[in-house]
Image (cartoon, rainbow, N blue to C red):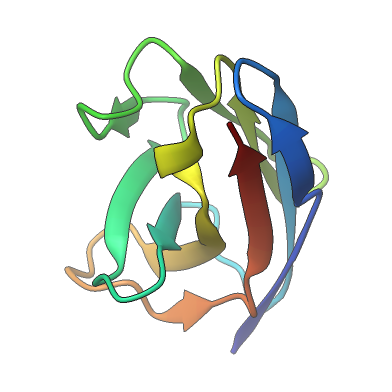
Length: 118
């Protein structure tokens, strides 16, 4: 079992920046993928970004060039640096964990709210 705890959400003006953090603990294996997802009110949860154990990353088109995902393997922590924020980035952001060879994410955090005001 892996536990994930997000932090860093809040209220920010459009054009601003914020960094989310997610600390993982428990039965973590080294070959893993950590991801960020978000869910806006009335919408389905959507993929934002993911990073694998060696630092390879992928992004949703909607955040490419504005968001950067990174990780500190020594701290079992994943970060999401969000720049040039837009009101449509408003959502609850969740981090997720999966073993590299598993298709679906296996553990989820409780979420952290990001609100971008116009």
